[in-house]
Image (cartoon, rainbow, N blue to C red; front, side, top):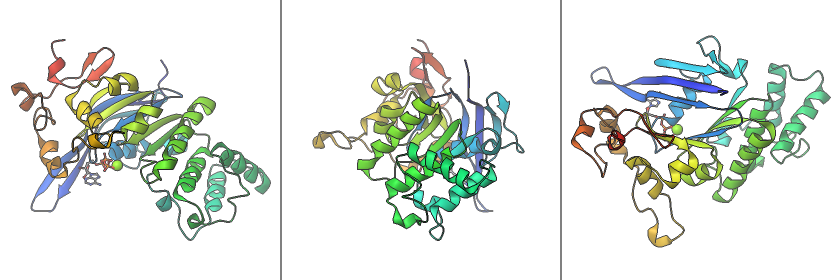
Length: 318
Ligand SMILES: Nc1ncnc2c1ncn2[C@@H]1O[C@H](COP(=O)(O)OP(=O)(O)OP(=O)(O)O)[C@@H](O)[C@H]1O
Ligand SMILES: [Mg+2]
């Protein structure tokens, strides 16, 4: 099977605190996954579980502590960064911070075309930019010479997607791309991801805490908790029949259409973050409704049940 991106046993540690009290936090803890060509793969989980850290290591903004990242089978090294060599582009949460308010948005596109030597003349560049903008429902004419504040958040996020597409990337890493976009426009952005996958064969690493859009857009999904992938498989299997107690909790915290059922559980417990990151055994043991003695001392193995990977002692004997 083709693997566009392969993450093997990746760990990223940060040193936190001051000189008196230094702690090492394992933000990403021995995770492995892969992304196929033309696939939307989602990393989901609550705030602070290590999603952005994973993305940063993949695009080369941060160095891995241990583990390997392969792009098309080629090992990523300190000197060979994927966004230059392998057509990986990134989109971030806040489109307004992607663009300098004092610069016209088209200048970013011309810069990218120039840096990657994608055009032979100004007209050639304009044609290329126009073609890319049309993929996201915009045109060169309606955007030329304008500043970021002349667009809505949704439009600007489309523009940042178009900017990522200028180089014809094979993989787009999208870190919370819709969380700052109006709810009414979110679906149009995630639909765009599907369109890019289907029409251009682009793969997307979609990072989100929003399981509703994740369910809608993903082919496969990995649920992260405190640096670990606790469950991974097709989105149908993982979200319709979650096996890990944490996946279940996360899914059940999606706001329901029925207002009576809204926010049935509170998942974000930031004060627990450090305690859980440093926990021996299963990091979810302190909150798990199904906790057993073994969970408090022994890290669960990755077990495959019905083609789904589950990191939970409940499934050890299946
Ligand atoms: N540069 C850093 N230095 C020290 N600790 C960091 C650094 N970046 C992230 N962390 C810590 O690593 C953990 C994972 O953070 P990360 O930003 O990857 O989470 P996330 O899943 O993206 O969260 P969110 O949903 O809030 O964006 C957190 O505990 C965070 O405080
Ligand atoms: Mg993040």
